[in-house]
Amino acid sequence: MTISLRNRRTGAAATATALALASLAALAGTVTPASASGRATTAASAPEAAAFSSASGDPAAVSALTLPRPTGPYATGRDTLFLTDHERTDPWVPAAGARRLLVSLHYPARPGSGGDPAPYMPEAEARLMLAQRGLEDPEWPGMVAATRTFSRTDARPAPGRFPLVLLSPGFGTPRATLTGLAEELASRGYVVATADHPYESTGTELPDGRVLTCAACDEVDAQPDEAGRREVLAAVSTGRAADFSFLLDRLTGPRPAWRHAGTIDARRVGMAGHSIGGNAAASTMAADRRVDAGVNMDGTFFDPAPARGLGPRPFLMLGTDPGHAPGGDTSWDEGWDRLDGFKRWLTVRESGHFTFTDTPAIGEQLGIVDPEAPLSAARSTTITRAYVTAFFDRSLRGRPARLLDGPAPAHPEVLFQRP
Image 1 (cartoon, rainbow, N blue to C red):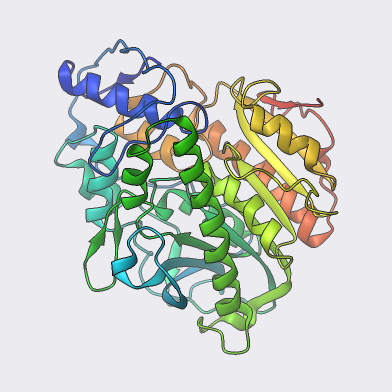
Image 2 (cartoon, rainbow, N blue to C red):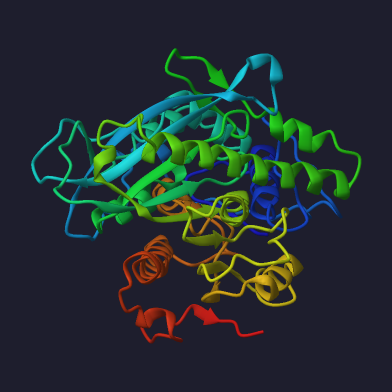
């Protein structure tokens, strides 16, 4: 992997950045993510040191960061829930007591209602996330935290009932990194619940200001071999399935925790995730029949799809090319064979592991370039939005989705795999 950091210094700090990003980009393959302290371990050989170039400029000159504007007909609102599952002890830090979840809820809203734009993420979370990637410019955490979003706090919901989509972020990654996709889906008439899984992210700030770091990352690092690491990562996926079953209870049960729960159509539920969150989509579907359709965005199936499949429920596998083409990550070949409902296996040329998140849009504005994943932020955003939305429109709304029928001239980077 070669990474060019525009507006960044070269030298030891740049090398640390490359190795951190290389290890993260390989999360779905042979490399496990760095721990909260920034360590990275490999299941095979360590990534080779990368070469860098640096252009002139001052990162402080970037006045503001912004997410791509949603394209749907609805304005969007955002609420935040802090939930406690008193039936489960936290799997990574039992001394912490009951399992807790922080959830962002994006929803279709009435135009002109609501207060300020919803904040992107707390600065403490941004600082830990950037440090884990070796990006320690002191001005960047505040800039990333202040990234402009397009959802309003306290917005009134649009009339009607809408399908629910659950989103799960990558291992070691805050839920905020899926905000762009959440806003897009909400603007197109979905309620979207994105969960942070405490102790599975570089940083999760609780309402009282405490910040929980990635104990699960340290557990992965502590394993003596690849088999041990894969076992822990499988437990992450199945644990998230339990998290989302609990969340569904709290959103659609008889005494819902969310004030606008009446806008959710509980008969139409989908789930998507990035990296380990994509595996969690399959794990949740296997454990909970209420989830009708799933999307795995570039995640290894550490918890394999069940041998019995997922029944007639649709599933989309959307990944990098060639890394997640047939014969690359063999868990995708095995998963594909076990899926027996409507299914699509798509790979995207020139993409990277974080193509399907907010990372390209924010990184490009900060001057971070990965030549081994040269797909632009604009194309990364357009492709992710188009195919994920088309899949849920087809699966949860019964709408035609010609985009899923075969290659499209508008998206030449997207390959349909037919093993």
